[in-house]
Image (cartoon, rainbow, N blue to C red; front, side, top):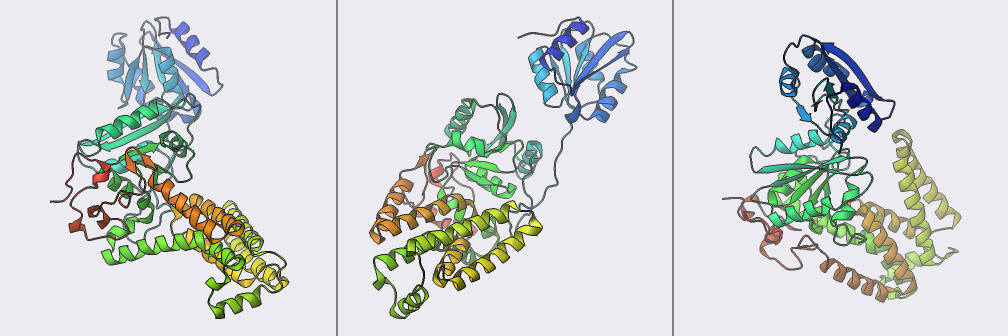
Length: 476
């Protein structure tokens, strides 16, 4: 690794050779016969701060040509003396200008990078009627400040690592010393250190490397956009990851029951929270299995329908040219296309597209005799049910399609067999030593107090044993 030499011109040329891009600029000036050169990245450096805290502070400098003395003269709160050229180049690319001067074998890094951030607002994917309205943004420093504000204790540890050969993305590892198991912290650090990839544009890239089964249908890393949820999970004994450039934080270990919980559950009476959690589970089960049940009952087990309902369905499907399974797949395909189009379209068009498209296409398709009214109702209800648990939409939409295909080809016994395989798969999935479907398998009676049924706060005195926290008690 090359180092800074006392020759200012040679050092500047060597640094420019490492940074040949046109937006890497140099600015030279002199103070009391000492020549200075400032190297900075034009788009991401705050030039006003650079001029105020560096150049103006050194114009009247008359001390010795010492890096330590010059650094003391600067008014920037973030300064660092660095002799290695490659490290200086990395700082310039991060937005921090580098100050070089004649006769010294080190450069001074000045923290005046320009930070572009949006305002802290409530995340659109996790809206709560009661509770905090703050959400993470794309700046990792702002996000760590939101977490730090909720833990006024020295036990909160925040360690930053760089991942990505070219992006050098900052990833903040957050945990509570004495509450998060040390084995979990070490395992996460080890997995992060083994990542060798060009760029990390979003936190979702890390989930592949942190999962025990990278190609699993079910996710194995928790996600949230709300600092209060992030802080609560850390306080339970989990570890959190904040990625620069992403508003979505990751939490480990992950349990499936987390996605049936909401931050609002802790600000409403326990009976209401228990009701909504059970409702979410039932809505998800119905959303996955209702189309499959309808198709398999039509093709293989008509006696599953009550007589009056059977007569209504028979009258609706009398002139339909498609088989039940093909009809349901056609309606599901239209629903998925409408969903994708409404998400990708501009907001002022997307709402009209989703409503008008659903009404016009549905009514026209039924009137033309392409599909039946029950098929439209079932797929519409199934689509609504999936959004009862928005964090599992990607997985449950695939499961719904798989169950529908199995029901159309094998029948109800195939659906039952596929469900059994799914349950075995969920039960045997373990990540960071924590079973995915805990506390149901393995069964932990005491930890059911904050699962599908929520007890009052006074009953939640002990942290979940499955997380193996060394600090068991959270409420005295």
